[in-house]
Each structure stands twice: as C-alpha cells, then as structure tokens.
Length: 457
Image 1 (cartoon, rainbow, N blue to C red):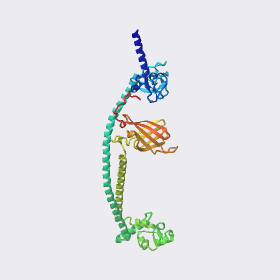
Image 2: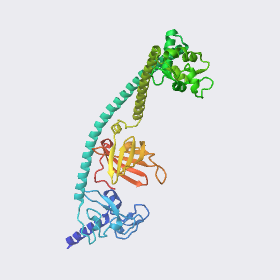
Image 3: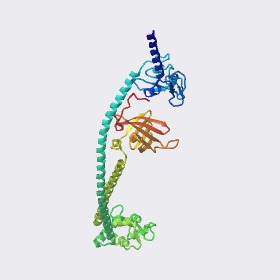
Image 4: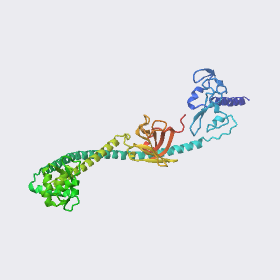
C-alpha cells in the first residue's frame, strides 16, 4: 500500500512539473525552478509557485502563464524539435488550430495535430543546402569576375595612357599643320596680290586679258555680244544700273559683237583704264582673271592640301579626346573594392513584364518600353545605396522622365547572389518609384557563421 502511494505521488509531481514548464524555452527555464514563490519576469509581482500555468493570469507580462491562453500578452514557445522553434501568441494555445509543427500548442484541445517538424526541417535543410551550393558556386564565379575585373581595369588604365600619349602627339601635329596652313594661305595671298598688281609683266598681262575675255564670253563661242556685256559690265559710279543696249554697242566698238583681237584694242583698254566701267563683282572677276595663272593654281592647291590635312588632324584629335573623356568617366565610377562590378559596364539586361520591356544598363540608365514602342527613362545612374555593412547591395538610378504627378521617375536596384547575371523582377511599389531584383555572382558574400535552423526567434 505504501508503495502505491509513493508511485502515485511521483506521477502527480511529474504532472505538476510538466504543467509548470510547458511553453518555456530552455533559456527561460531558470525562471521556473520549483520553489515556494514565483517572481514575474518583469519584476512586477511575487506569486505562489502553484499559480504558474494555472490558467489564470497573475503577471502583467503574462510570464506566469507560458503554457496557457490565460494572459493576453503571453507567449507560448514551440520547441519544434527538428525544425525552427518559435513563439506564438498564447491566445492560440488550445484553440483547435495547429500552430506548432510539434503539436505542443494543442495539448488540451479536440484538434488532432500531427508532428510535421521533421519533414519541415528536412525541406528547410535541403533549401539551405541548395542556397549554400548556390553561394559556393557564386563565390567561385565572383572570384573569376574579380580577376577579370582587375585585368580589365589595368587594360583600361593602359588604354587611357596610350590615348593620352596619342593626344599629345596629335597636339604637336596639330600645331605643325596649323603653321603649314597659315604659311600656304599667306603664299596664296601674296601670289594673288602679285597677279592683281601686274607684277608678271606683259606675259601675265596678256594672260589676264585673255582670262577677262573668257570671263565675259559666257557661252564660250569665242565672241562677246551685247547681252554678255550688259550681263557682266557695269558703270563704276552706278553699279546698280544695267547698261543700255546703245551703251553696250559703244563698248563693243560700234558693233554687236567682237572677238579677242578686237577686244584687246577696244573694251580691254577701257576696262584697264578703270575710269568709267568695270566688270561686275570685282572679287569674282579678279578670281576669274587670275584663276588660270599656274602660279596661283599651285598656291591654291597647296593651301587646299594643307587645309585638308589640318581638318584630318583636328578630327583625329577631337575623336581621341572624346575617347579619353569617356574612358575617364568610366574609370571614375566605383566598381567595388576589387573592381568586381566592372564587367557590368556596357552591358544591358532586359525583362518583359506584361506589355512592358524593362532594360537595366548598369552604371548608365534604366528604361521602360511599351509594346507601342514608347520608351520612358526610369532613371540615370546615381550611386550605390546599400547598408553600411554591404554598400554594394543596392543601386539608385534617379532623374528619369517627369512623372505626371510631379517629380521624376527613379529606380532602386537590389543586387542578390546567384550563379547567373540576370534581371529577375521589376515592381512599382509607389507611383513612378520602381524596384528591381538583379541577380549576379558578384553580389555573393561569404557566410562567416551559419545561423542554422535551431536558433530562437
């Protein structure tokens, strides 16, 4: 009989102990050791220990009822062996719904809960293992991209130095070609002045007379007519007035036309005196008169040659300076501590979402193009905007096209770890403010300590 009493007492005590510690994590068990009184965890009240888990709320923080639903602020701890433990509001204890995967929250209800923790844990472990494999592969790819980035950075730096040297050489050539062109223009001008001054003697004078005759002979039939004189000759003191037919006949020696021989002794003498008539458009006439002179033609060809060469050197110099400017802008961008993001420059990634195609060109711009062909700027490269611990986790593209509600469109790009470089999602959480998920191996970061699936939440 005494043995039965002792056994019953042990079972009773075990039940009380189980009742008392239900819904408590291992880290909190020190507060619930068997003793005469219990101090609420917030220190607000001392109660007899037998009131713990008696389905009546005594402590304001609900700490006396961790295993019942009596306290509105209480929390029940799901141990969930094999999966992640977590807390649920104590109001969910014995409510007929299975919240803990180990079914510990429905210990006194009609619900028939199955323990699914092992299956859930296995799924999560497989997911974590897959993520770790992705991370390992991503880190390997990242290392390759870092090595390529370093080489590409050095290549671009060398390219910049080469271009700067080319620019210096072209600058020297440019100054030399400018000097040559100036000298050729000066020689041409001197030759033209000499011709106009008649410094070449009778031979040049005859050449000038012949050239003037050809200038007046518009139809090149070997004779000058009344119509041709009226068209090319004008009075010195009244250039706007057209010569009358009688005036033109008089200049032609009384006839209606004349050849070169007659021209030499009549109209040519009148023109060379320069006191009554002249050829219209003096500059054009001078050019026509002296245009066939071999010395002037040579000087003109030399000037044109030097001008052409100068234009070529100027174009080359401008092109090289433009390349230098573009390269300097490219190298001024922050591509990460190891230049790992450098490979993204010059690349574009597209994603079609319904009727729109989104294009992300890292370090350049983000655009949205509709099926109708209308393209809208969603922002131009602004800055890195990640957290202090991971500065390169976000990109910001700003100052896109104006939004109809005011302001301009902008896009925030979140970079995530993956084995491929691809644009995964695009959203518009608020009007004209876009977000993108951009996956790339260079966003993978080494994991120093894995939290696992056993940590408390």
